Image 1: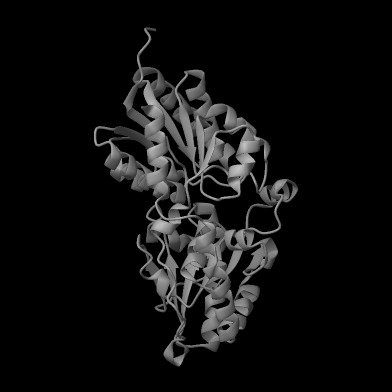
Image 2: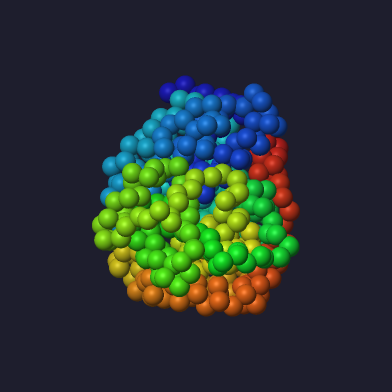
Length: 382
């Protein structure tokens, strides 16, 4: 095969989950703003598709998570890897940018390294939570790791990586909290429900969060719930998750899909699946309880490899249990409702939680993460 000279005007960006899709889309927009001639090919979700020049596959819609579930997607993975291999050999892009989603992306980075195509990792895997050996593997495969938590810089530097802390991208999109919290008249509490962004997460969390809300409503009849759903899962896919658990919708539950947090920022409390949503809530000053359930097989493995005491990013960053975390069998409607009512009935405790959250913004750098990451990538390509 004849050698094809790489062009820096053609790049590949790969993400695999909704938060990665959102952050990758913002990075693509920043790259194109700085270099309008850039051609971006991507694998990701609907947000990346909307801003890319070429789109290969909606990997976000697959929603593989945990330890056993990705194996069910083996043949899809194989097909996509073959597509990427062919793309790299035929197009010879100027670089590959991986965004989170280590299980798939480390294979893509390996393909790029084998073909001497430079690569970058933006929003690196949370190696500080489990499997620290991944940092060394990443260091060998990329020109630079662009991290979003300040403490990650030292971890990757020790692993031999060229690394930069660019700030957290949520600072650009999540609104700051109101100066003080006003309790609603008539105890008409707005309860946010964030069951996760993947099919398995929604199936496990949505029914127990809804059941917990009904318990709150039995105490505060004017309460309403708002289910925050991602674009990948329309209403028709949410309903079966409740029916399979003998749970029902009611007129007091509204489904919300938004990109600007305008509704979520008005919530009084939220039941939240562990993940990026916990940090979004904290940055808005939204009191919450965090829950997570997974397949027993995955949980048994997770207990062996996770090296940190908390699952919510707010607690991890603050290094203390500010937010109640309920895992596996403890994630049940009674326990969730009990924690919610303990906070709703105690405004000073709610205010104390919000006060703890206020310190998080200063920990995460300054706004402009995508711009700084784009600048570094483009400087390398020059």
